[in-house]
Image (cartoon, rainbow, N blue to C red; front, side, top):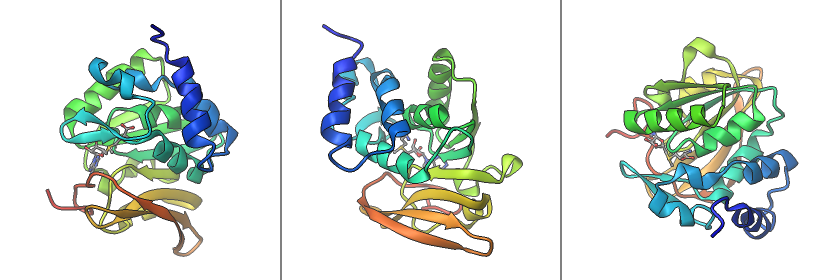
Length: 215
Ligand code: SAM
């Protein structure tokens, strides 16, 4: 049995990502490089490359590969960015961002998930990631502004604090809407204010916090 899952990754790219419109070469390269199965419980590793989210404990999920790729593609990363991630979860999306950014700042509100992701990403030799146990709806003021912000949980509205921490010309991607369905929204920070672009429907777990849903 092949535990490297190389063929499963290739299949994921050919059957789930490219046909649905993922064409950013850097995103496809990162998705073929990062071993997604390492971010799941051993018993669920065989599910890692299937076209759906998978539970990671604490009522949370690792997002479907296509959604990870789509959100990353929307950010148009080139390797030079300071990127803020809200919702570390398993750390899989964090690894993809770390492949494509200068530095990644990631925030998680469930401490055991953050600790587990930190341990795994350190053991995989990522040296450009800083972790914080905090309410990510408030952002991470200390290192602002960011060129890119990604929110991997569904918000009732665009959190103001996050827009404030976006650099001029910077992009944020965030699911916004109700508890069961959201729209994937791209926010582009302008000199004054911001503009938004809608990228279709999605379904995320709740963003919980001061500028998110109440617990
Ligand atoms: N990107 C992750 C991955 O690749 O595994 C999946 C993230 S999961 C869909 C959403 C995560 O957002 C959960 O781990 C949840 O605890 C976290 N979260 C929800 N509200 C948050 C907040 N206010 N600040 C930080 N993390 C939050």
